[in-house]
Length: 104
Image (cartoon, rainbow, N blue to C red; front, top):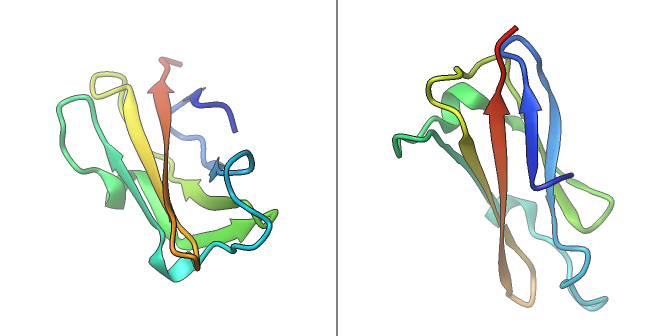
């Protein structure tokens, strides 16, 4: 997943935060301990309106995947989506992804 992407308001799709280059072969992601949050450009927590965390899963053993909902506005864009990925060693990694909303 690129660290920045653009979508229109009504689009919905999966995104992921990955730690492929830093996770060791001896550790595994613990999905129950991972957090994903979304903040708008005013600093407000918009996780519940922007992300569907019921679909939070491990993808390809080194990534955490969630669904972006059909929401967001140009005025509050860009949004910062932070993946806090925890492993069984335990290590914690943070991956930030930025979402821009474009006009139709």
